[in-house]
Length: 267
Image (cartoon, rainbow, N blue to C red; front, top):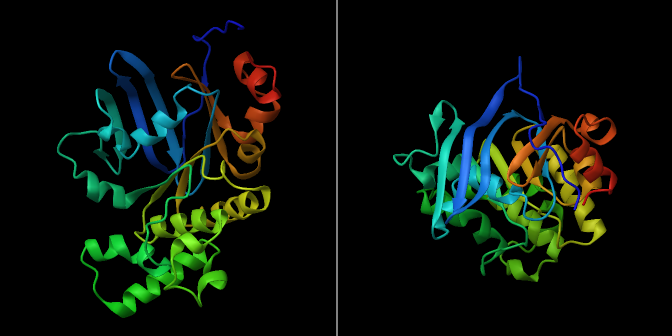
């Protein structure tokens, strides 16, 4: 295994740009294991940021930290700040459920509820008190259109979501997340279980969604990161080694470890 100098860093800041969320000195511990080692990152509003790096480097752990998804893991401790609209969402007095309405998440494998397509999208809305049938219908249609799924399911909204293909289920999960009108959408390898055609449709959906949402995506697929993201952060051993405009990361990275990883010569 090649040794890299972890003191070398290239981390841009969002000067003169609108930052939607940023972390200051963020650490994540699983027991005694420090999985994230003091990460400072800023995310620009209405852009797609890709988190890349080898397996076990901390990118998914970092992503889940942004809306406190690590809270449910035993012996996990998170320190540092996660700043969203002037509030440290890592603070103990933050209402996590309210925060997750603003910072939504889509997971690696499609996980629709065992309910109808319609109920998948309205479930959380109803739990948060929305009872107006006309408004619910409107949100269902809008969310499915944004997820590029409406034309395929508009005549079968009351059929089981599990009758959909894998790619359709994942776009339903995206529709379910954006039905809550979050500011930020987090996606943890959302296309890793999908075929190339479904992957392409998910990517096209995300590119269109950034007009209204700020997106952070973990991906192992270098081509995917290069195709859809505006910025890319390279994680290695719990650190961010390089964070820059995606075109620079893939054509002229400043750090040797990044160059080796994106060119396939890592390890």
